[in-house]
Image (cartoon, rainbow, N blue to C red; front, side, top):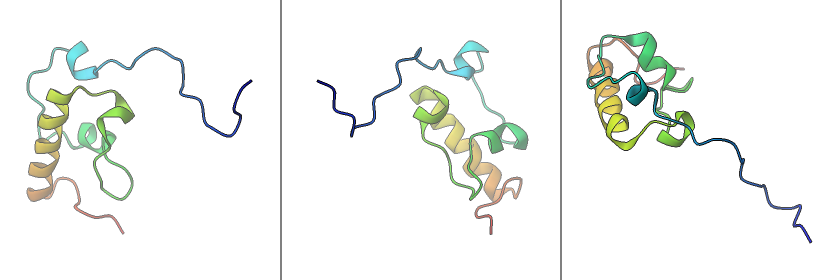
Length: 79
């Protein structure tokens, strides 16, 4: 008997960190196009599960986004 009211978890392959695949140690805060890929339309940072980023790279990514916000390369809030 299946419960159709609950959403089933997707049974695909586990996402792999794109930064680990490319062997990137540092994420450049000046690369605005890369950083915007990991932000939603309101300017918020996506959680690591969305793009499959590992914890180490998620920390460096969030620091790079925060630094780029201060340097006015990416916006704090989009209206």
